[in-house]
Image 1 (cartoon, one colour):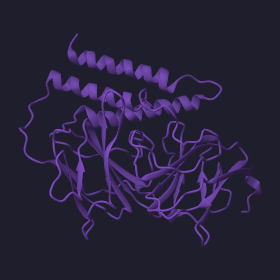
Image 2: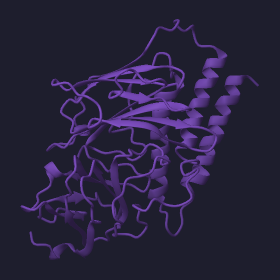
Image 3: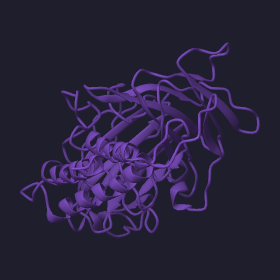
Image 4: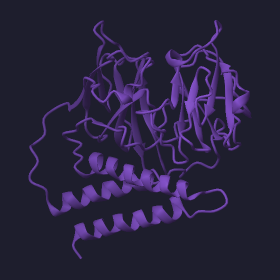
Length: 367
C-alpha cells in the first residue's frame, strides 16, 4: 500500500469513528436532528481542515478565514472574524494587521504534544502597541527582541496561530460577506522555494487533516478531567461566567464565558435577564448541540450591547422564542426547542453574575 493511500484510508477510518463515537446514535437525549447537526459539523470541520492543513507550509504561511457563514466549527460568534494558519516553533514570524474598527483583537498560539493541545501563548490589543491608524505589528519568535511589548514567545510544540477581531456594531460583522481585514503573516528570513508535491508531502498533508479532525472531536476533552465551572448542564440555568484555563484548547484566556442549554417548548418563551458588566465586548449567541451558531444571515440569533435595548443602568431582558413576541431583544430559535446559549465577556473589569432565566407562556409577554 502506498504511503498516501495509507494516510487517506486512516482519514476515512477516523471519520467513521467520529460518526460512531463523537456524533453517536439517537436516543432519549439525542434526536435525529442532533445527529444531523453532528454530520453537518463534521463536514464543516473537514472543509476547514482541508483548507488549513492539507497544503499548509510553515515556511510560507498564509492567514485564512477560520470561520465563514458556511464553515462553522468550534463555537463561532457572528461578531468575530477569525483567521488561522500553521506555524512552527523553529521559525520566527512577523504579523502585520489593523484593528479595522474592532473593539478587541487577539493573537493566540496553539501548542500541543502527546498529552493534549492548549493555548501556549497569547496577546491582545490592550497589551500590544497599536498605531494611530489602527495598524500593528507583532513578532513571534523563541528569543525576545529589544522591545518585547509587541512580542509573542513561541511555545514548544507550536502548531498554529489563531487571530480574533471582535466588533460590537449594530449589524453582525460575519453577515457582511464583503468585510475584509488587513492581516498578513511572513517569516523572518528567507527559505528556499518548495518543490512540487511529493508522496511524502501529500501524505503528511493528509495526516495533518486527520490530526486536526481528531484533536477537535475524539480528543477534544483529552487532558481535562472536569467540566469547566462556567458550563451549565441544567437547561435554562447559567453558572457564573469565568475565564478558561490555558488547557482549554482554542479558548481565549482573557474572555469570560458562560454557557447553558436551553429548552423552550412550543408556545413558551425563555426570558433571560441580567446586567452588562464593564468590559470591552459582551454578547450572547444561540448554538446547536454541536456549537454551530444559528442562521445569523437571515434571523436575529445573537445580541451584543450595541444591538440590545437596555434600561439606563445597563440591565437587559432578552427573549428566546419560536416567533416574534412583540418585545425588544427577541432571539429567534427558528422553530428549535433546544440548543445552547453562549455568552462572551471580553476583558471584564468587574465580577459578573450569572444571567437569570425564566420560562413563561409566550402569550403572557406584553407586546
